[in-house]
Image (cartoon, rainbow, N blue to C red; front, side, top):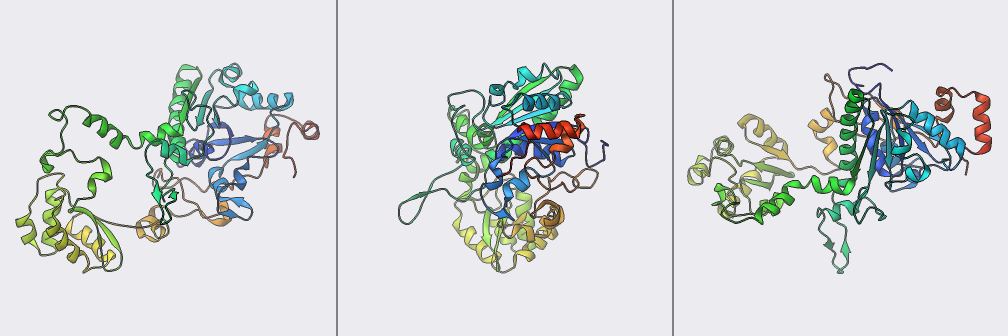
Length: 414
């Protein structure tokens, strides 16, 4: 397979055993050109029926997670199925176990078994809570990793019922991304040393790691107050970490424009000066010049009232134009529904088309020599490429027919 500029992983062969969302780990690799073969039971991965929306009978979760991949249906409870799996691994660079850790080992095809077949094999396990620790065998779903990591604060409705608030899922997306990074590092090592590698990633770990700033800030604040302080711009007050410490901000805050909202971010004195000059209000700068860096004018409700009135005089588009002209940071405040209409979004992230991948989907946002990765193929039906993959292993049509008749390969109807 050739190495096109925007298919840099065109020579990488990946065997994926996944259940539900963690299969995203190999999607990043497939988007960059890797040949990813999803091995699933003859009855298929029930990801196709999970969540919503359902597009022409198949979930968007499947259409996105398994785009660009091929599917082979094997019954790994049969000797023939296990033999074919080992044959696949013999020619592969990577095996992905995206389910509970140890699932493949219990079938006799864990890392220790497979490295005997392929000494350079990179084996990556992506699971909920990881392969160690008291939670390792606990059943779970995606939101659990974000609640575990402290990312989600329960909401309470008008009737007193607790609710899951509207927030993006972190762990189930970032965990696979970290796994893909680890796989590429391990492949480089395997090619240099000739030795295989086992790595494992927990989606819960990833959720916590992505909130490192808040978690590490609280740990820092456990140290003596004369050693760990706040910022000089706040008279060294220890404010809450992350966005929790932004509530009282004024020069770094959301303001309502005449037709929506914008985010104002003049935390540096130079940007604040540029803003005041641009709106012809240098009196505001002279009265409240602020510190050189990280000064949000917290609690200054008098200034906040002035800024509220100023921002209400222009549209969001006008403020964005002003940001460019005056060199002061102002950003749109979009929603998941409106963000794709933003000109920067549509320029950088053109959707893949329905006819190509079954539903409008976002590309992997990596530009290689000025281009996004090529449009992937449609996510496969259960075992859609079974015959194709088996033929690549050298099996004859007659042998494939025998295996299908015995139930070792699928798909299984119904």
